[in-house]
Image (cartoon, rainbow, N blue to C red; front, side, top):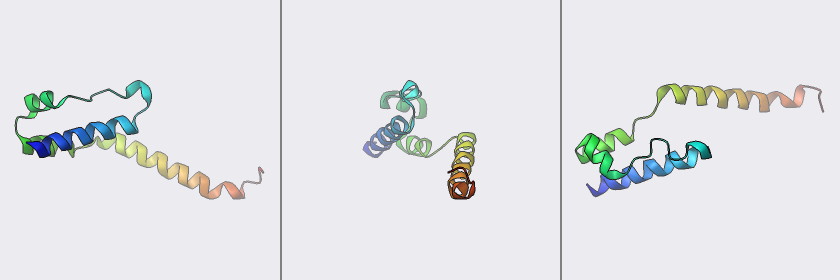
Length: 79
């Protein structure tokens, strides 16, 4: 169960690092609530590895668009 505690704490840490301030505690649950919801250590660890596919897709598109913009900015003649 101690691995599940570490995984859950790390997942919550990542949520807080990558979110903007108004959302820093959104869906950050204490370990006791994770045990109540998932039951076993293995299930908690598996749940910590899941991500939101839609949000990941939007982030990937935004990153690709930003990279494209940065890569072509030198040719715009706006300097």
